[in-house]
Structure formats: C-alpha cells, structure tokens
Image (cartoon, rainbow, N blue to C red; front, side):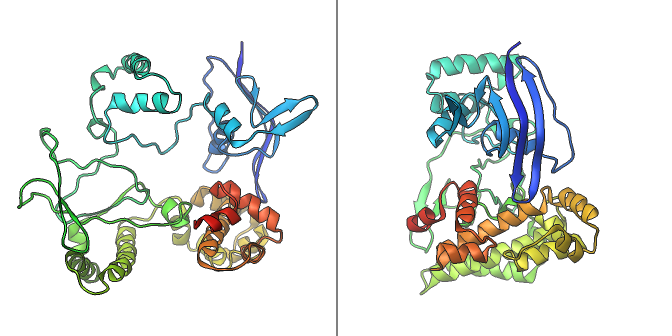
Length: 399
C-alpha cells in the first residue's frame, strides 16, 4: 500500500530540550494511527512537524511521498521558501486541539469556507462535497444551523451584570434564548467618548459595555487563559474595588471630559487585572503558567525565570530553586506546565524581546544579550521562528 506519512530518525529541539528523539513511523493509506502519551511527550509537536508548523532539526519526513520542507536537486537538499511550504501544506489537514467555527456562519458555510477560499474550489462543487460529508456523519439536518445551536459547542449563558472576557478575541455570536427573530439593523448613537451600538427601541432590553485589549500575540499570560472566563455579577458587586472601577469606567465612557480617553485606557488595564484576580479566586487552572505559580515548589523556579529571563539557567539551578532532584523537577514541571522549562523560558525570552523592540531603542545585539543569547544570529533565528518575521523587520514596521 501507499505510504501517506513516513518519518525516519526525526528529531526536534527547543534549545536544550529534546522534544522529539529519533522518531520512526510509517502510516499507510487507509490506516488510522493513534499516538498516546502523557502531556509534554511530543504528540502535538510531531503533528505540527507533519503539517510544517514546526521545522524538524534532524532526520527526514515525507507526506504523501513528498519530502517535507526540502527539494532534492542531484545530491543536495534545498530548503523550501514560504510559498513552496504553503503549497505542500495544502495537501495536509489538521484539526487543532482548540478549534473555532465562524459563529456568524451556518454549518454548511463553515465547511465550504476552506475549500472555496484556500483551495479555490467553486461553491457548487464544495457544497456538494459538504452535503455528502454531513450525511455520512448524520448531520445533514444541521446544514443551516449555527454553531451556537449545536450540542457540545462552546456556549455560555450570561445573567444581568455578568462580565465576559475572551482572551483569544474569538469571533462570537450574541443571542437571546428563545425563538429566532429577524436580523435588526443597529443604531449607532454618537455623542459620548465611545459610540453606543443599540439594537431595538430607545429602551433596549440589553445594554452592554464592550471593549478590547491589544497585546503581544505570543503573550504567555493570554495563552495560559481559557477561551473565555466569566465573573458573575454577584461576585464582582461584592468586590468593592471592582464595582467602583466599573462604575467609574461607565461614567467616563458616557461623557466627554478632558483626558477621558487616556483615563479609560488606564482604567481598562486595572479592570483586566481585577477581573483576572476575581476569576482566579474561583478556580486554579490545572495546567499552565498559572498552575505553576500556584505550586509552592515549582512556583519558585518559575518566578526565578520570570525575574531573570536572560540568566543562563540549567536544569540543576532550576531544580535547586524548587528544592527538587533533576529528574523529579523535570517530570513535575512538564506535568504542571504542559511543556518543558526550556520551551517556556524561550517563550518568555521572545516576549521580552518583542516588547523591547517596540518600546526601546536598544540595538539587536543588546536585546539578544538581555534575553539570554550570546549570538545575535541565534536570537534572530529563534525570534523569526516565533513571530514569523525577523526582529529588525518587526521593529521597522512598528510591530
């Protein structure tokens, strides 16, 4: 039978951490392969290598008989450019651990979006295939339903006064419970500092105060948060600081007072911090950077890295900070953080470098040294792997 995926002595490193070590496997056409292992063992990393979201460091990988990431000319290998990699990636499908449907599109529209926009197939052809697939899995009757109407979808019910925060900024659909109504054109009311978007009459049933935050897209803080978090009205109204801050924010948003824009920006940052505090009092995440901070021993090692990200950390020094043996520290860290210390430290360093590029006039060499790299070339390579562009280009483009 034909080999669909083949890996030969595949290796992947994150600085000192050996994420994939001499992986050999072959998946034939029609075969279903399950890869099972504990958190941090490299399952997702292997899949990301297959789909070229990560570059392998050693060994060979073939998808549908084609060498991934390289082309062979005579006896030499030549690395593919971005457009060539994109062409290879078109033939590979991947369902991510966290996937989001477009909430404003029906089930059918969601299915045909990729084939039409990426593969440039005609809507008629894509629709025919989509209907066949829906019928195959018993969802033909859901073709015109919206994601929010499907069982098992990410749905959250809000009561009056609740605060909803979506750290990932995912597109979403707001709807009331009950029967569907026809779409209503919104009325935009100007006059205050922020425009009011109103649906319905002058006395609307729903009044929402909305805003957004801008942040580093690789932020460790935001990546550690869930897709959404809710602080109930009962909880925040009992919190004097949060209640007062929300009232002040609303008052400033409704007026045109001097300096209100800057005041609202500052209040928004404070609001985010208080919302996060309130949420953390309800629950402690089981995995991630917040879980590390909650662990009395591992938290010491993580706080040491946060305090000195540019320090030349070793397993011995981190294990000593956590008062653990090397082996126990590594097992415990990967279990709680979900990744190795080196992966997390690299993310921290790249986030610091990103902020320094935007907010300082330090040279690339100085920034590299400040985040723990003795070589500017090694720093630039890792930065480009993380953000998709070289640090110099990001600085010149304004980030």
